[in-house]
Length: 449
Image 1 (cartoon, rainbow, N blue to C red):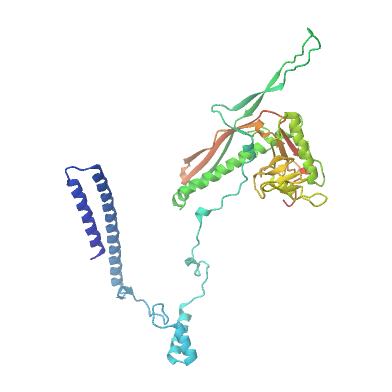
Image 2: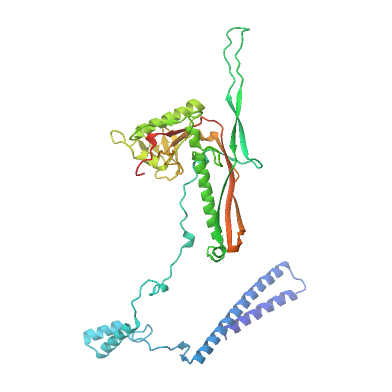
């Protein structure tokens, strides 16, 4: 029985079962569900029947074309040339003939070996994996789902500040600020004058800024790429990763809050008029004086804000330079701490060895965070790598969230679509003296790190 006959018989049986189920006077819900399943099976059998018929039609057409071309076939196999002496399916053995020729000097074995040598000389070519010389038969394989994403620094400092949702319908955030407080004092005597001082207030204004980016992609790439929906995630994921990088860079950075920029923490911490900058001056920087500079910055935060310094933020190269330094007795100044062990006589500790970002240890007992978006060339003519020390929660980062859209009409004449992301953000600093930026010749970016 042919395959089509078997499939047809199976289909007829399924149809009979469906007709029998529907012929009943009292059809239950379960019976209807069973009928639905049977109909799905019938559709699958119909698809198989159609596939087999198409294959048979192609075979018949191929056989007809061979007949017209005068190609001889035996048992369904096309004979185009004489079989090789040591054909894969032949009766001759190359190894057996080698033994017969060399050990017994068998003439027939020598003849087959000589004939094989002539066949190889005719049939083989000098080919390689170079395209056009055999390499076309060795196709490249692309592990598309394992693609290496573009390396970007993590968002660290932006998550240290207080994060809040950006209110809708505004272009600036305003926070009242008391710049001069009231005054109380001891009364010199009964019925004598008491002390008073008027409160003076101001406003901290944070303009709402826009962050955006886009990528133009051909429709051919969208429709023909085997990634399919994965291409959407690839492009949008990369755009959103850079969005986060740009936002974090602005929070850390030296922007002054004008020309579409945010007022960054380095600008706040370097303000010599209203801020509390710390200068580390040293021709040949040493970790000892670096630890002293950090202690001074902590002191400035504590004595001006009257609150605990929450974190120290520096570039990874600065931290690992600190971790490599030793004292006069070649003892490390930043000591790894694991489990219950305690660091002895150390300026700092390592709690997360080899970390690329985030919390890695302490200096002067204050948590140290690594942020690769910290500049290594701060200043117009310098290569300072500043260090931030402060109470970062005093700064408020308002975010709208990232919006995504696809614009098919912008470059439709070129069969191009635009993937775009955008969002809004505002950064407000409630206190001018919450962060100290350490800079100076001691913060020159360490060489080799």
